[in-house]
Image (cartoon, rainbow, N blue to C red):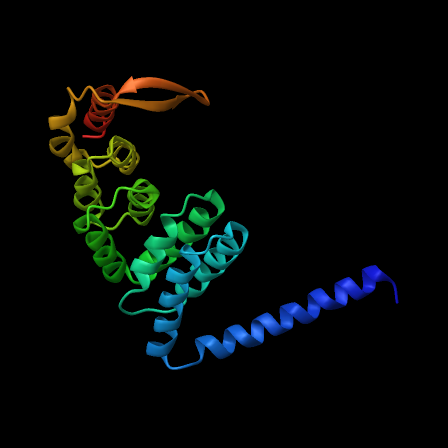
Length: 211
């Protein structure tokens, strides 16, 4: 048998083993599964080996999305706060799944993140996930991100509100029309400097057109 055949057989065996172990994990007592996964997220985020950390966090995002209960959304938001784009993508997709299936659980996790004054990458991503899910409470929840001290988080919330298209957001945005903080926005694929106030004014004008 050739080296290529051996490698392919090993891949098939690894896939079978992965499915079996995943079924065993998710079939265990739910409370124990939650505890193991939440602890594994904390451990992975503390690893100095980034390659190993990324591999674990991507896998954990998929696993966490398949269980419910206390702490799962918080663990996924912790994964979303990673600096590696591929990890954030996996976590964002997992959180969207949770949000569509169990919105109240997801929204409570977002509220906890806001209450704890987080301002990392996760807080720039969450407004977009809320926008994608588009539940009735999406607008007021996204608006809470406008109070962040991180201007990038605020800008993300403004852009998510523009995408959501709810004119009710105008009253949330108006206090920021004169905000002189500098941000970078994309224009024809290029980043250009602008003020937050410029972005807000443009968004308000767009939303008024939706009235």
